[in-house]
Length: 329
Image: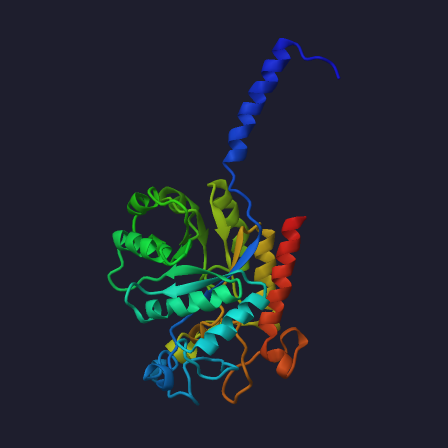
């Protein structure tokens, strides 16, 4: 190898220093993992004194519920340890590493159930993150207190829904003092999230943010040095719960597959799933049964009968394995 003269040597050193900042500006690539949004707000008379959420919009459980689908385990209570244990087991078997818990403030019914979910999730090696919901009276300062409270319970990942309800400068006062936690903003606006001091962004909304937008969103996030956690979804149908006539058809699993492909092609750092059990919006991947008057998973990936009931969890396992293999390459 020929020796470099002094001029060539200094030119090489200068080139290295020019290149290093560009590399450092990119977000640290994580092992592609999967998180799923999880809802703990269901109640039954036996466990909770009354039906909660199943009866929304004037419905009369257990035969008539506020969902376009009917759960395979029936109308259940999120306070029932056997239900939560089975759910965490199913999440783990699907290869999902984190359950993002819908949390509505200190002292809320969802807060009261958090300890149960933390215990059962730990049993199956599932981490629990907090989905910080826009509860009445939520403020940026109050969110800082909420994060401190939840960190004492061992939670380290926080997903802030409707983060743009507050100014980036207000968030910065909180995020600039945080260590040992990751904060994701629910927004496609990477510039806002960067200015606010968030670590990453996620989309959640299956109707607004389809797979075709993931490449742009993740590219902009990575350019800002942020992590990108786009949300894949099997579909959307909320007419029975809210009267919303908008629908994202499942197309026998094609919608779910398409959003997963788009997320991986976009080099997602974390794939988030909307949702495990948001029955009221029909985005769930939790098993269903066939029941007259309700939709089901029949025909998804060619499955029928009992096999169709858990079709989306089985397909999730396929995609979590695909994501892991893609990252290793």
